[in-house]
Image 1 (tube, rainbow, N blue to C red):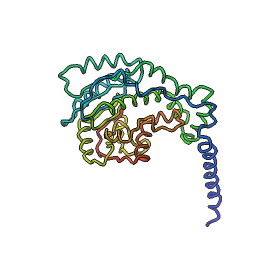
Image 2: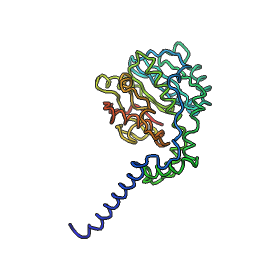
Image 3: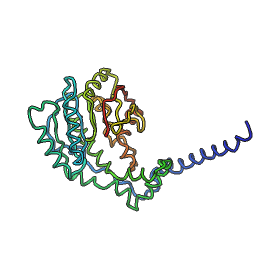
Image 4: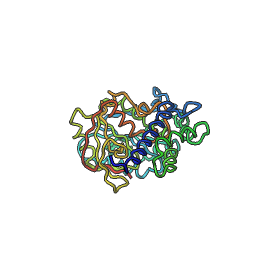
Length: 316
């Protein structure tokens, strides 16, 4: 070994040792990072969460569309795109309001545009959720981000996991800005409704109201699902309408809207989104719950993923 490399190797070894010690004394020995009390958790009784809904799903493919009042126009565009899907697969769409204040305007939009019997495809339903569920899950994320009882532990955890980010403060603000805990409580409620009530449903797509679909999306996904070993199928997509992303099950390389699940596979695994989060779930875990759900199914349950190498989805 040349002597001039020795100091560099020593520095690298010390850095590795530092990371290992930090991991042991924080994440492994104390995953709560000194919390004096348990983190606030979702509040929902899944046994009764769908009591307000009785609509009958009878389609091959179901889209759960998570949206709110700001996305009324883009949600209409998305539904028009589903109406224009090629092929003969029957399609249903469930409109799920991600905040209580948006429920009236979204329900009114669904009734005004999609109650006409001549609109044969897709069938569109508004999913009702009790106001108490919105209220009970209004503030957990904000509490962890700002309350002195939790914020120091939250920042200590975040520094360990995200401290290498150049714009760390911006990253933290992103985790705390939206109520992602409520977002996935609602997602689980609608997903459970489909799994419990739809006998004919074969595939399910969970998406957001600002997304858009190529007319070939459903047919190409269904063709790929002809392989019975596959539990889900990904397509490539456009990020912000311009950047082509070659999807793969990897951080920042997939969008849940570009993925279709086989309904029978989700029933087999018996998991909802919140079931796959860590026992100690921080705001960043709720923020990344889409990807964590897929990663858990693939890496811990052995789910098989297929791929359509075509750009068939746009995330705006």
